[in-house]
Image (cartoon, rainbow, N blue to C red; front, side, top):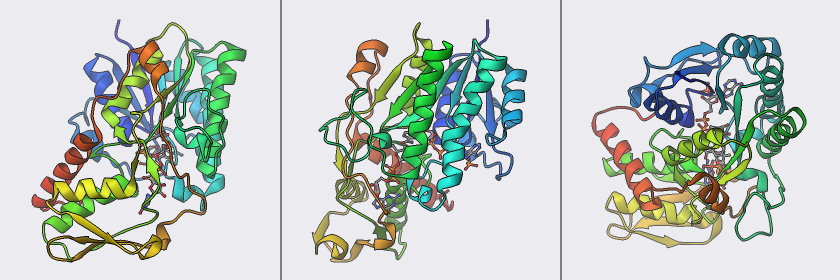
Length: 344
Ligand code: NAP
Ligand code: G4F
């Protein structure tokens, strides 16, 4: 029998990769997008699946709409990927972020309980929920200490997922995912900002890449690997919480150096903190500088995950290395600039 998957946030990075994976596995994929925004399907087109996903409008802030959509589709699996996902913006839009990333999770869970209780549910939780913490590596048992409105809203969604699992017996799982990137990443996120800007500089753009804190470290993997983990969680007999991560930490500075190298530049740094400048070692040209505008009101210094539970129970590991990821992102951006496209 053909399974039906319902994917919220289908027009985002993970929505596109997950839809492709599910289509490859023979699923019928119903993808929900928010009607109020422009229906920007470039990621689905980039993966060649624009016409294979059934797109439906869904307003996650309206319970009656959520219940009607879920009731009419009655999916076997529902992946809740929709969110205001930019941490920086959540400081400017804490209420909207709380509604879209937090309360909306309860609307979906409540709708599932009411009209489609056999639907298996995946919640897109995040390593940001750990915030500043004492653990050298974060796992499912590490205490949460969220430090942004985004992380706080996500933590609420995470606990509601646990609650509906334990109290109402739903097959509801929470994937605590560390940063995952790809050529389909939005340009507001630091990795894509770096790869896109270097692709432009390498082809003659007279630009300097302006960044915030260069010394924060993240655990960056490839989004294609992470959507495999989401699907695996919903194939288990029992639902649960799983960290997905590579286990390797890299600073923003080291990521920039890696992207520069793919473009043939070796960076030499001078100055400290906001005075830091990265120059091309050959020409002395400044290529990177710090702009305090990109600092956050509160940031998390280091996040690095321990995905051993996912390895043990799901057989999941990240396959793409940081170097492969950076090269893939830079080369795709480079090719797009070469074709004369303005980078999305
Ligand atoms: P993304 O590219 O920003 O995609 C999120 C999607 O959600 C966008 O298509 C967005 O639509 C949609 N959306 C935003 N607000 C909405 C609303 N009110 N109603 C309906 N749709 C709405 O994010 P992603 O990187 O694919 O991440 C997918 C999910 O995983 C998110 O929940 C994110 O918070 C979470 N997560 C991501 C990472 C990561 O490193 N990528 C790590 C941990 C957790 P528009 O295109 O119209 O804005
Ligand atoms: O790329 P970022 O904006 O990603 P962030 O904040 O880690 O959030 C992403 O990953 C989370 C998983 O942990 C997801 F839940 C979330 O939805 C999103 O996908 O920033 C990464 C780091 C931050 O510490 C930030 O302060 O890079 C630092 N950074 C330094 N300069 C910058 C910049 N971030 C951005 N966006 N732009 C800069 O110029």
